[in-house]
Length: 115
Length: 115
Image 1 (cartoon, one colour):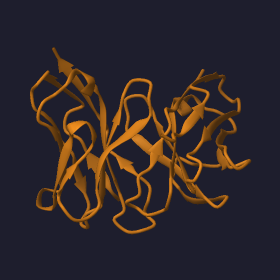
Image 2: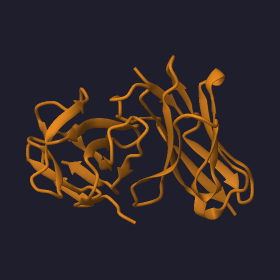
Image 3: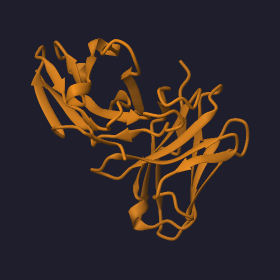
Image 4: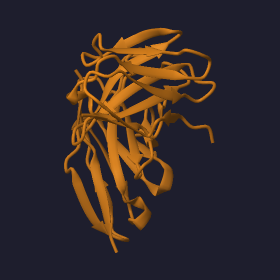
């Protein structure tokens, strides 16, 4: 069965600093990979996803993530944190085979931005 | 931009009571999902639904749960006899296709508290 591990349930960075949120998956065949963000009192919103092709994926709000098959990782980064980035971030996988469309989530990482 | 909506945002019920959680998926989407998140735990898949049938369900989705698309717009999750452990945030999602790499769009959730 698929599983996703997000290292660090809470991450705190200063405004303007690099944001790095870690995600590792367990699957012998690379799945499809997603990052979702949840702002307070809102639903989960897709930040970016990796399906095939280029391993560096750019998403909304300046976020990007790199798929590294050798490390079974899909870490999320943003060069310079903004106060509005404070939210909970979820890494998720689906697949790897068609028909396996349910999302399997990590436990989430709460990102705090310090002024 | 089209969005998934859910009602109510909060529901408090007594153990043993029936609850119905409602969702309006994005209008041209064909695949619907329910997930839940118990406080402090991962977001977990419950069920997927297409063409008025359950496509896949998890072990959590036992006989106490049912889903229905009663009309062309609503998608509901019914819990027949609630238990304390059903207290959670319930998220509805929808997608255009059943491809594993397809984005699932989430609603804001219904927070259910069973007393």
